[in-house]
Image 1 (cartoon, rainbow, N blue to C red):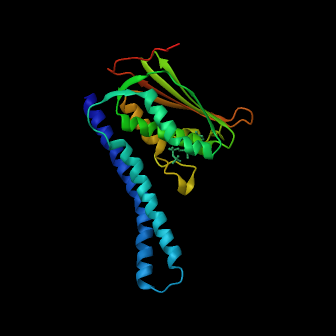
Image 2 (tube, protein in one colour):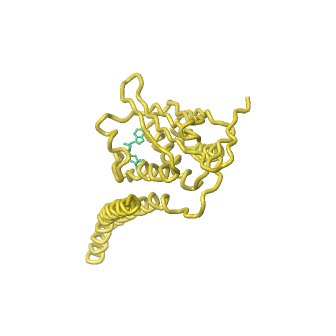
Image 3 (tube, protein in one colour):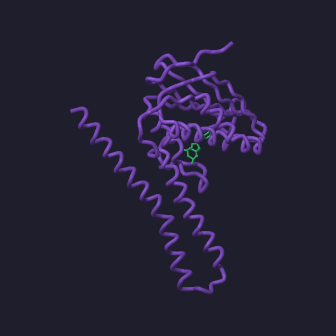
Length: 239
Ligand code: ADP
C-alpha cells in the first residue's frame, strides 16, 4: 500500500542519513583518537598545544553537527499556536548585535500578528538558519529584508528573507538542500537548509530559493510558506 511504501521510503532515507552522519562524525573523532595516542606516547612533544587545539577543533565540529541535528528532534509534543511575528521579532533582537557588527541594516516588513500552528523551537531553528546564512553572505553596508505576506494556497503565512549578499551560482543552487553540502569549509555544517526544509515540510509548508550573482542584482531570496493549520488566524493589518 501507499502507506507501507512511505514507511519504507522513510526508513531508507533514515538509513542513508545515519550512514552520512556516522561518516561525518567518524572523521573528527578518528583525528582526536590519533592525537590522544600521539600525546600519550610522546608526552614531551613540543607541539602539544597545537595538537590540543587541533583536537578541540575536531570536537567542536562534532558538537556543531549534533546541535544542528537536535533542532529536528527536540520537540515531539503536540503543535501549538505560534505567533510568527513575535518569533521573528525576538530572533531579530537576538541577532541584532551580529547585524550591527557586520554593518548590515535589517528591514522588517512584518504583519502584526501572524499566527500558525506548529512547533515554536523548530520554527526558531528554521529562521535562525535563514538569517545567519543571509548574514554570512552579506557584505558590510548591505541591507537584509525580512518580510511577511498572507498566503492563499495554502492559507497561511509566507516569510521572505532577502539579502544583497554574494548570491549563489547556478552549479551550487541544486545542492543547497542536501545534507552536509556547504561552501563554508570548516565553519559550516551544511545541515542548516536541509534541517530547515525538513522542519518546514513537517509543518505542511514549503521552502524555496532564488538567487542572482549578477553584479547589479546579486543576492538571495529564501521563501518559506507555512499553512496556518488549526490556529486562530489573526493576521489582519492594523492600518
Ligand atoms: P552551512 O550554512 O553550514 O554551509 P546550510 O545548509 O545552511 O549550511 O547552507 C548550505 C550552503 O548554501 C551554504 O554553505 C552556502 O553556500 C549556501 N547558502 C545558503 N544561504 C545562502 C545565502 N543567503 N546566500 C548565499 N549562499 C547561501
